[in-house]
Length: 240
Ligand code: F6R
Image 1 (tube, rainbow, N blue to C red):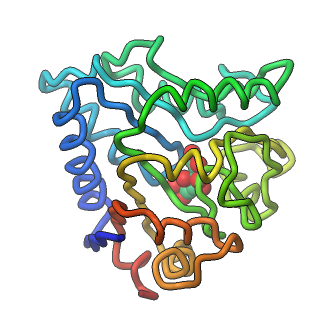
Image 2 (cartoon, rainbow, N blue to C red; image 1 turned 180 degrees about the vertical axis):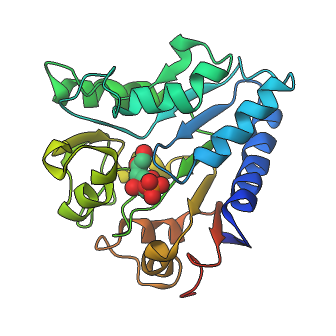
């Protein structure tokens, strides 16, 4: 079931997303948060930072990130480890041992997936933050991914590599594979908040909410989840 909130700009989108997250954090003794990288949650993360600056402690939070590129060092400027530390963790009091990000540098990535899924299974994610790809992916689960997938190695779609090329010197530098929580691992969360802005997300947002539930558009599985908040700007909502 979707609760859809349409906002006039990104600032409002981020403030609404923060409200959803803060409510979950306040309500739980040890909040377990599923976190995403990418442009969509940056404003949310800024709000969390500001809240911490005002004195609120996030030290009880346990976090699990959705995904990480394979084959770039975690200290690489475009790794998701670096992204999360620069945009959030370096500014908060979350304990480093409570931060979980898939290990894209493991000698044995298959085992790294199993280990991540096993750890994730020990918790119940109270809130999963998601962006959505222009092709409808969630995490790096590209079109065609099975709905019952667990943490896994995936080959990035050409569209996704093009979308992410803006962060690298050239498209050739964008990694070809990543580790991602699977669709089942993501949808186990008790509550999900999807953030999407911009016209290039309008088709994917439409498919997620109004299209058929199909692996061709992974986010459409969220129609079967009973607690999803979708926060959009007018452009992303324009096809609804
Ligand atoms: C990020 C992730 C991706 C992004 C999606 C949207 O951890 O898993 O699914 O959420 O690609 O990216 P942005 O927000 O950059 O448009």
